[in-house]
Image 1 (tube, rainbow, N blue to C red):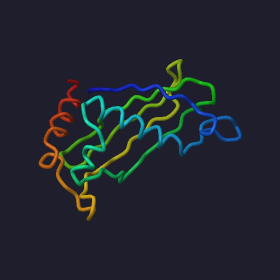
Image 2: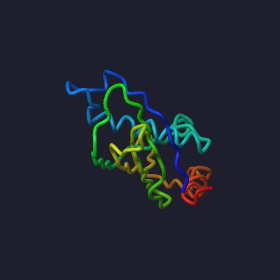
Image 3: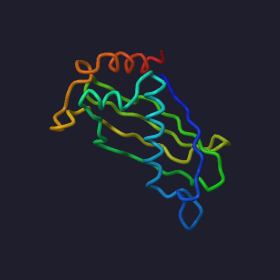
Amino acid sequence: MKVVTMPIKVRYQETDQMGVVYHANYLVWFELGRTSFIEELGFKYHEMENLGVVSPVVDADLSFQQPIRYGEDAYIDTWIKEYDGIRVSYGYRIYNAEGQTAVTGSTKHVVVKKESFRPVSIRRSLPDWHQAYLHAMKGE
């Protein structure tokens, strides 16, 4: 499977009083990783939105193993965990410079019409994305 790695600069405003990254910020980092992954496939979210569709998160899962602290280097790996032509789940691993895992998780998305939020088939509506997802799952 294709995995895209992105460095994350831990900003002071992302931390809490303990100096660790506040848990909700990991969802923001998931989005950064997902956007980077999609761009690596040759696409941009705004191009999809220009077609009148959006891709909301319908489920999110996070597992915390150890904190990331202000001043540390962090990285996020992103890949396609599951894809069925309609729904896509992205997997994530956030880790420090020593390779120690801090957070793992996933988000599940569907593509919907922007005006009505009615689901659409990625396979039919975005055939280039569909093919790119299939290739990414094979590691191509």
